[in-house]
Length: 119
Image (cartoon, rainbow, N blue to C red; front, side, top):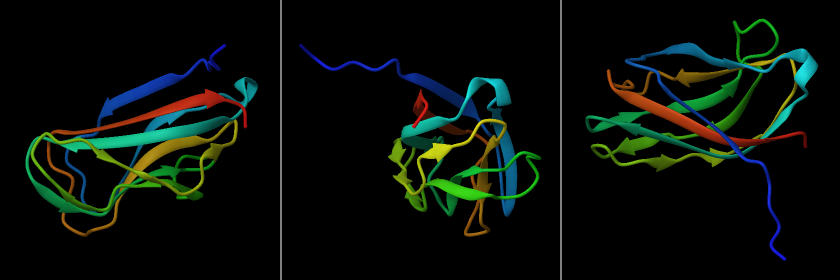
């Protein structure tokens, strides 16, 4: 018998981003936290950037932790897997994307992550 999980996926277009943060999701306080299983990013043009999937805390205005790191060079329309840093994100927190001013995320940048509820 195979083990199965109810995996959810969030995928969003973040647009151009340079030395900034952008909120992409919110985890309702009543729903519980999530464990991120994997994250990917892709860009429509080649770019070198420091891109991160981040926990933006309960206010959604500052970085509370790094979920995954995508840093490096992106080839045209080629998904790049993020390296998971801290997979669990608590209920009531925002999830966002950060670009750390090493290049920029270009105008067509897609970020996705797969998760399950709980730890």
